[in-house]
Image 1 (cartoon, one colour):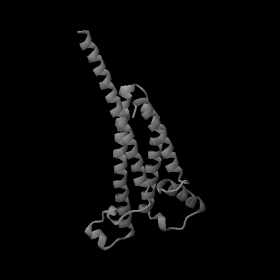
Image 2 (spheres, rainbow, N blue to C red; image 1 turned 45 degrees about the vertical axis):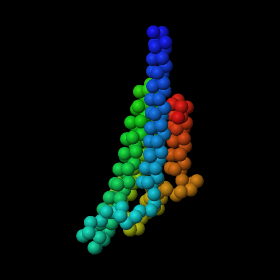
Image 3 (cartoon, rainbow, N blue to C red; image 1 turned 180 degrees about the vertical axis):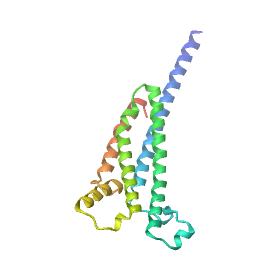
Image 4 (tube, rainbow, N blue to C red; image 1 turned 135 degrees about the vertical axis):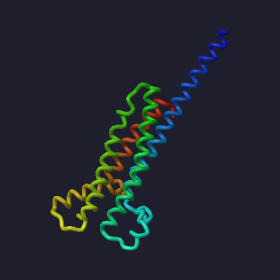
Amino acid sequence: MVIAILGYKEWLKQLKGTDRYNAGKKVISALSDFRDGIEHVRNPFMWTGEFQYTEEESKNITDDIKAKGIERAYSARIKVLNDARKSLIMALKECEVLQRLGYIEECKPLLQIYAKVVTAVEMHVEEYHRGRYMRQESDDDRQWRIQQREIIYSRMSDKDVINNELKSEIAKLESKIREKFGV
């Protein structure tokens, strides 16, 4: 009987370890998807198919139709990012249940990057709808637009502040998850 009880206890330990390991793997995977989602939204290249023009719209592309196409393209990109963000939060909640630690709190810098990128994209789309992209602008407006472009568009270089911040925060969280969950 003693052997059965000891075997049962070992089996429970192994199950807990497996759950922790799997939860950690989910977070690592979700972090990768989140990073890819941010990169996808910030990709400066857009393909024609992303604009999702109707057959009627594609016959006569005006500035208004172009603005709608840009909005559709970014909406689709942001949907991918939102799905990745939701998966990350769910995976972190699972880790919180297993470890009773505040992993969602650890994720705040990533969520701030998310908010900064999505807000900048929404403002960018709004500028297109207002037709402000073609007008003369003041130095202040020009400076503001440059700052927004730094957030919206990935420069694919070491000087990309958003990308560097994203990589740094993901590395910190990933390191903690790997350490605590043995991934």
